[in-house]
Image (cartoon, rainbow, N blue to C red; front, side, top):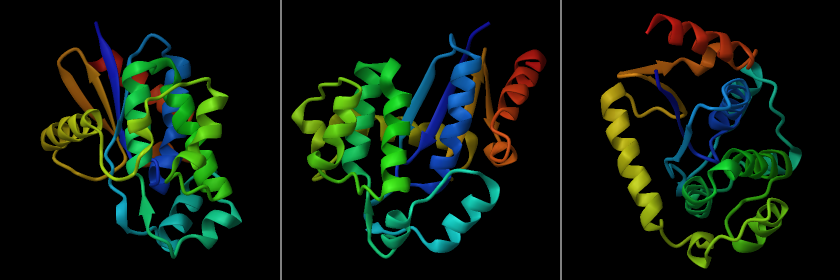
Length: 202
């Protein structure tokens, strides 16, 4: 039997931020399960996050939002650099991918770090002793790897019939299961029980 997890997300999406806690629980409970972090680069500098979304996430989860982040809600969000960097680490240093995502989300949502230029992310990269190429630290456009990931996401979204993010997909043998992450945001550890149930029944 083989199982893999696919996490379609955006680093600047509050719902993705909350769902990362589920992914961390899954990674801890199933250390041998490959986890594919797939940044969809939804925030392109022309969209914002509204307070209603943040309030909804706070109601269903316990992830914190700092005052600096809340004060920035009127600003446009751009996750291009984050998509480039996180895609690079997913491909080149997979063991650090989830840690870097979590570190970047904490910096963004708790400390209001925009994550839009090299100075924003360099301390986070250094903390994990990573050495990404210069092209991953630019916001002008997606790298080729990030574009390829975007196309892979489109194919998965076509299969599951939704473009909503975040999305957690469990692939077990030849079955692809869309996990309802909203059911577990208040109790992230429960996602492990749900996956065990799916593995036993498929």
